[in-house]
Amino acid sequence: MSKINTREALDKAAKKGLSTLIPAKIKITVGMSTSGIASGAQGVYDALAAEIKKRKLSILLTKTGSMGMDCMEPLIDVMAPGKPRLSYAMVTAAKVPQLMDEIAKGTLEPIRPFYRTDGEQSLITGEKIKFVKGALPKELKEIPEINEVPFYKKQIKIATRNCGIIDPENIDEYIARGGYSALAKALTQKPDKLIDDVIASGLRGRGGGGFPTGVKWRSCREAEGDIKYVICNGDEGDPGAYMDRSVMEGDPHSVLEGMIIGAYAVGAHEGFIYVRNEYPLAVANLSKAIEQARANGFLGKNIFGSGFDFDIRIAKGAGAFVCGESTALMASLEGKAGEPRAKYIHTVEHGLWNRPSNLNNVETWANVPVVIARGGKWFAGIGSKESTGTKVFSLVGNVKNVGLVEVPMGIPLKEIVNDIGGGIPGGRKFKAVQTGGPSGGCIPAKLGSLPVTYDELSKAGSMMGSGGMIVMDDKTCMVDIARYFIEFLESESCGKCVPCREGVKRMRDILEDICKGKGKEGDVELLQSMSQAIIDGSLCALGGSAPNPVLSTIKYFRDEYDAHIKEKRCPAGVCKPLITYSVLKDKCTGCMRCAKVCPTKAATGEKKKTHKINKKLCIKCGACLEACKFGAIKVE
Image 1: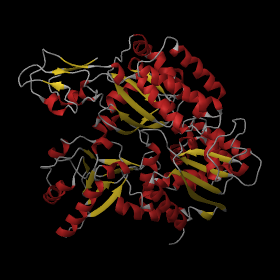
Image 2 (image 1 turned 90 degrees about the vertical axis):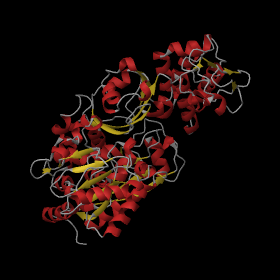
Image 3 (image 1 turned 180 degrees about the vertical axis):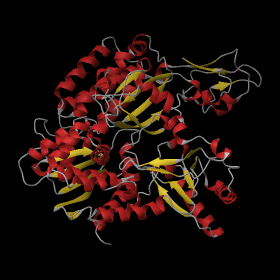
Image 4 (image 1 turned 180 degrees about the horizontal axis):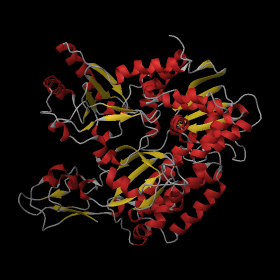
């Protein structure tokens, strides 16, 4: 394969990629991210391949990453020349023969598309491509266009611009979407000009710290030393968070291109991507992307004929949450235990192997090519003044539309939960949302108008973090939530410093006692004073932010702590030692469902007569509550 070192060669590769991205024949694409595969996408892909072979059809079958709406997986797209791309949700292998019949006949029955896409625009080049030729038939007009679907309507995709669209294993399709053109542009400019543009963009680190990216780059460039490194943090350890995983799986070249540009800007010639070993698909797709980038001349010697040399290696992490912290990550890269260092030692001056090192996370690197291609001012025009651009969140928990969303900074929390997320299932009430991962804070529903920015979330007692967003309904116990996250942080503490090692453990003990009905007057005040001591004395951000779940739940849900301690009652009906199950006489129909599912025979009664629950035998498993269809089981 010849090296791509000119604009002409890049354009030639783009034309090749366009031939598979928008082919002159029918194309079927299957979402094969980890979430898609977990939902059965591999079986769907295999069934499609078998049907195409059986019917001897000339159809291009490809794979792609996640379009974000993971609650509707497996998702597949069907594209015919001159027609919209049609997206089908929750496809199963059993439905494939019917779908193939539908494609052959050109109908939309019996399987209806979820939405359609009439065209696309490259964020890099600004070029618009229309799929549709002529007027849309009436039956297609009845299918909502992607931007009309509430889940996608308010999203702006920058970091996830190619996920769910390109085949992550096909570098030519990435190039067809404008890939590596930002690198070609960057290598014709002075490094200081690039850094100025990144500073002008207002891009801040998306890994949790929120430090201005361009300022970090400049500090690294000006640091003394001939050998420097750039590092990508792909060690995503927050429960329920998978933003970086989806980008690495669905668009690995965007990360590579951002790192190459950053390396040129700071003067580095070697880079590392630190990825969780629990992300095998991300590792596989990144490894293939690195091989392709080398073969095409984007990595290695004399990139684009500029005289600039740079290469990247992958390092696998062992799953330690603390290794998401910069100095702990670098210690792990060196083969040492993942323990943090004191913060007065800056990694841009003394990082990996004590040399200047620039660390950004996956999402930050994926934004860089767009910033360089479109300019810092363009990027700064999205979002808010202090928090520019977009942010990717994993929207999980008690919300209808679970998945990945990329929204402009400054969007109100309630719009993410209610408009994009579809609200709370089962008609329950929105109670709170936790942002920032396990060490973030829980923000109550009454603050739903809060703009999602670094500063506003911090003022509310939470933080942006890497982008986890866990939605909670009115059946969530906030004391139990605080206990859960503190327990997680205790287990993930490296144990190097006393405030974190001992303080977080002691906080967990107190919270467990409160949840068991053993809480005492003064426990809340003790938790507050301990929290401040841990924040002030901890060595790294894990300990420094660990008390956030406790402090925020005390601030906004103090009444629940008081109910647990003073009344020995759990208002949400979650903490087993503080709840009892009983039968509401006016609602019980004597259907005997509760009696049939009760493992201890605590629920008894005759058919069509009011049942009872023996509290001595009841183990509070909740089986009766789930089985009852008439709302006759009361938990208090």
